[in-house]
Structures are given as C-alpha cells and as structure tokens.
Length: 428
Image 1: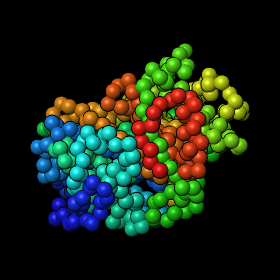
Image 2: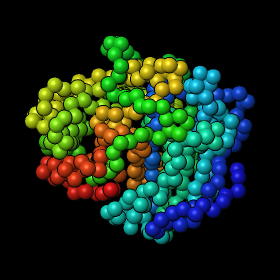
Image 3: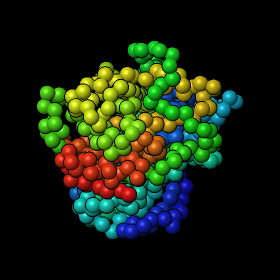
Image 4: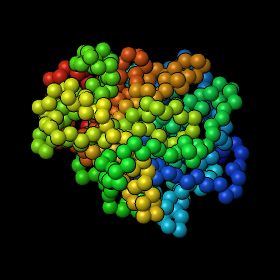
C-alpha cells in the first residue's frame, strides 16, 4: 500500500481528498489473466457509480485502516479487480492480474448525513462522493475501481465506488460490496470465478441479425469514453409501487408499467421521429443471483410499429413484456473482428434499466442497512436512459432519467401531467 498524497480536489462542503492505493492481501500467481467475454467487451465504455451512506450510529468508529484492511480478502478472492488492462496481439483487451491495486480516496464533508439527504440539488455532492476517472489513455496505469470514503460532520460515512462495467453489471458491484461488509463483520468470504458455461447465454431467437440494442461507434482507442453529440442532463424522483400500479391495476409488474408511462412521456416530448425502438435491461427471470462477477443482466430489445405518444398504456406495456433477449447476439458482436470494436449500449436506443432487485440494502454494517444507496451509469448515449432503483423503503422506488439537455424540460412537463411525483434530485 502506497503512502497517501493530498489531492487538491473537492467543491462546496467537501475537502481533504487523500489518494492512496489498496491491493490484495497476498500475491496473485504470476501469469494469471482474466479474459472478458464479448458482452463484457461491449460494455467497456460504460461505468457504474454507487454511493452507500451509513449513519453515525453505525459507522462513527470505522477507521480508514479498518475499511482498507477488510478489502484485502475481497481482492484476494477476485484478483482481476486490482489488475490492469492490456491488449493481446489482435488488440483484444484482457485483464492482467498483477496486483496493481485499487485507488482509495479519503475526504471530509461539512454536512451531516441528514443534511445531505435533505439536499434538493445533489449534482455537486454526488460527484464529490464518487471519485471517477475513465479507463485510459494508458491502459496499463488505469485502475478498474475507485473507492472513496467520505466522513460526514456527524460521524456518518459514505462509501462511493466507481466501477468499470467491463468487470460486471450492477448486480456484480453489489455482490462485491456485500462481500466487503461480510469481511468487515469477520466472516470468511468466497467468490468463485464464473465458469465458461455460466458466462454463456441462451439463443432464444437466433436470427443472425445485428443486435438492435447496441450501436457501434468510431474507434475510441485507449481512452474509453462515450462520444456524445448532445449535452446530457439528469433528473431524479421517488415514488411508491402503489402509485405506479394505480396506472394499470391489472398488471403487477411495476417496472414495465413505469417504463411504459415514461416511454410515452418521452415520445410526447420528443415528437417526430418517436423512439419506437427501446432497450430493456433487467435481471434474468431464469437466472440465479450472481455469486461471481460478470455481466449477466438480461438485455432485450423492443420495436413497435405504432405511435407511442398516441397508444394506450396497456398496448405499450404488452410490447415491453414481449422484449427479445439479445445477450447472445451482443456477446458475438463483442468478439467480432478480434474483439477490438467499440460499442454503446446504454443510450444507443432509449434504455430502461431495472435495478430494483439489486441487493444494495443488504450491505449491512453491524447488522444495519445503509440509510441511502444511490447507483447510476456513467457514459449514456444520446438517446438517453431511465434507471429504476430500490429505496430504503421496500415499497418505494427512485427513478433517474438521463436525456439530452434540450429535451429535459419538456419531459419533466409530461411527467408532471402524469402526476408521477415531486422531484427529489434535479441535476442539470
């Protein structure tokens, strides 16, 4: 572990950004590598950010050294999380498990946890709770995870993770963090490497066609950033499951209902051409909860031949329920031409992401859940994305909408007309 150095960053109530490196507790066997799947490679321009907030009652006596030290066994179990990317002779990326470590950032916040949770505009606050740098331009020096520990004025604690999506989806991030909370509790932990069989996907409709849900972009080289044409804006709000189901009492799938309502709102705001193709990302109904890191969430496409703005909600929801699983096709596209192509998934088409079943609130310290968890996707294409998250209340949801800035006010107007709810976060 390297000695920390002060980083002159931070804004508003945040200060004292100290940067250090945390690695495995034991060396990884020389020559160990991790080969990303085609689906992993297709996700490489995307990142996941997660913030876990704990009250002072739970976290006031947790020291920096204690937090760092209990990550050691997690990294021992999953050595590629502290590795670095390389390219093979063909140019295909892989991870060299060389124990280079994860960046660990320490900071202080002059707000209490309650003051932070009451804040209406969290744009500065949230960006300050998760330190993020994209992969590149030097792959061999780019960490795949950043972990930030922020101490609030009251003694509460925020742990923010920036996570390269090439390693795994939000379920995997949650699995990784839950392993840490178990290690913190003194448990012995184990995380198997996914087998070849586990990393494969069924071919329900093998058509040979290119997957609709991803978009190939011009080569980005070794700086893995989405090339957006539009300036993107994010708007978040919370609501209850009952509120969603009241729009369509005969259907019990609140994610499909909510996606249908918001799809219709965006279509009305956007006008011609309407978004008649969308992507749905959610847990595999036939899959098990992940015990290993991988990209396994079901990625499906929906294509309708009618006006979404004029359609009945029942018709829209029915089409969402008939979405076509494209994981196998994306997996094939990811390894095409030697695995060197670059793609966008989130926002290549208007994308709806269901994270409501992710076990974020199972990350317990002293047998108590975090008071708040926030998760978002970094690197969303110009068509935009809607992410549905669990809330601390099991019967509530947090919805985050990311769209081109010039569309956001129109969409917010349509959301108000629907009576969806009062805004919780407005990030311009």
